[in-house]
Amino acid sequence: MSSKQSTKDRILDAAEALFADRGFAETSLRTITNRADVNLASVNYHFGSKKSLIQAVFNRFLQKFVTHLDKELTPIEQGLDAPSVEQVLHTLVKPLMSMDKDRHEGSSNFMKLLGRAYAESQGHMRRFMQEHYAHYLRRFTSQLHRAAPNLANNEMFWRLHFMLGTVIFTLAGSDALHEIAAADFKESVTLEQTLERLLPFLAAGFKS
Image (cartoon, rainbow, N blue to C red; front, side, top):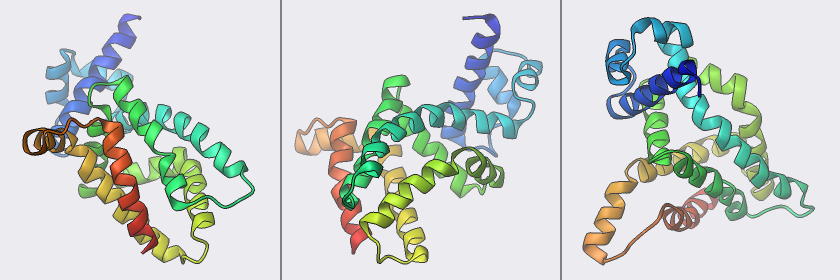
């Protein structure tokens, strides 16, 4: 790995952790450079602006996520019969699990970041997502439309966001949930088991 790559990764790692813990508005570039042990010129060189750095943090997660999602969606799209809601939602399991394989607490950090982006009204992120990842969202929602063809578009919008909020809350706090399950119920739970327990709940809510 070159020194430039090493510096860029250190900045991304520091920004990811700080944005997830403190939010975007409360995290200054100076705080990030101190955590990453780099100078401000390095951030400007690699990213140009704080907004571009935020987008790069998300992009690092999403590039791999959509690669896995593509593999999960393709066989469902090619099927002659309409999928069930459960089958469509299950396409998210391996992509989310891949985040934890690539990075420590990856899925939890990503959900914290996603929640922050919604709560702090990061308008540039909406434009960024539309430009780079809208295709994958359309593919996912088109399969949900196949699974629930009678659902109006506006109702689809609301139910998707209710599901997203539930996923963000569950995975962003997964460590605490797993600790409670272990302490109160002597239950050792993995991320995959959490997702497999969550999906039927989401499907039931979506179909209600």
